[in-house]
Length: 137
Image 1 (cartoon, rainbow, N blue to C red):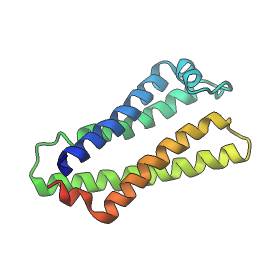
Image 2 (cartoon, rainbow, N blue to C red):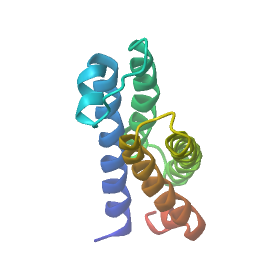
Image 3 (tube, one colour):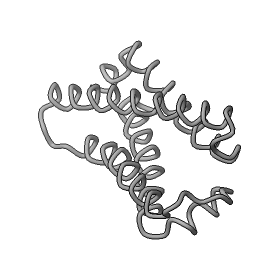
Image 4 (cartoon, one colour):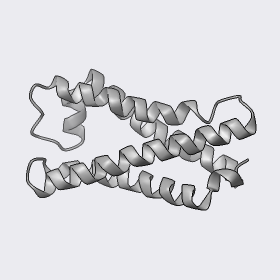
């Protein structure tokens, strides 16, 4: 598989994961949290919808970048910036959620969020360090 194809597939996988979760949190927060195994919903419940907007935006950022029709150098710069920003967000979220679970403020089911964000963040930190995006140009 070509590096460009692999990076685009990664973008679509990460993007669809968060975009769909964000939309579900926005429009059906109780249902979404129940599907995640969360039994104690945040109160008021619209806080989950508020988080859904953020999750949607992070996910959608992956879907916008690969489809850009700009010059190769600008596209690569966009991918690097997107990876850096979302890796920072994902790292912060993973640390926050893990600590909240450790201190008993959040249910252990939330660790699935921390694990997902950790996985995507590690892929992106490694990819940035090794400049995988350059391979895709």
